[in-house]
Image: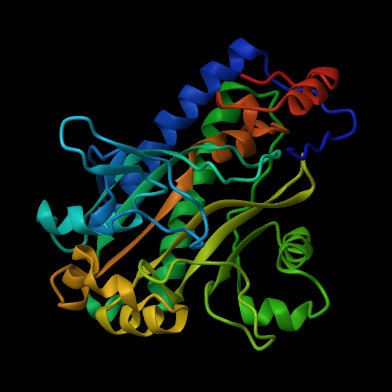
Length: 335
């Protein structure tokens, strides 16, 4: 069963009709801001990939992909969890030059996703990826790119508030950067989510860096697949969500694994069997470009900028009867 939080006294600032208008404006505006900020070109991307290709994102390694067999070929395809690996392969195949990148609409079905105010089995995000030099694989580049994305988000909010002045959302362009180890040291008695909430309440725009590896406590801050982000060069962009009173992740991103860091992370995570997959072979052989990339939630961004309390207010998805009943009683209109 899903878990729903109803903020006391919550009412949507926009009508259902205005919400649809605003969603379209957010997507159009942010795509333009993002592509200019990071020098990206729009491309088409797959909804599903060959299971044997190794291109699907394994997320935390436990989620079950939606799969189906194709009548014509008998082969098995998987609906993507994200396009983290496909994008890097596409940059090489399309011969994107240094300093340029791609972005695309990514739509996914995550059947094992928790259902609550922020999560849905339907995922929509902007996936992007950009070619960089090997010597640019640094925290400085990661943090500069995060700042560009935050600025693009805040510029989009400015445009939306100009069109809908009744929206009261406030976001800061000033980012507080902190590593997961520093966060654990700061709040040693809290869970990772509690640490994020405590830090974001004091620092309303923050980037949590270095996610995936084990901390001194022996536990990782959060799970990351071993074969796309370099665990020392990645992070999440987060804002304080005033409506829900919680830390709110907008983007997971990072500088992608080099052949050396892929080799190390496959060993650490116990996934050496992936070395035989076509994508991993190409990466380990140095056949793919060095890149930085990430995903930015489309429904998440609309939720945040419009001050919505539930992701179902900005996307059509599946909700159980208890969720629909609770939202209806609270005046929350699910699409």
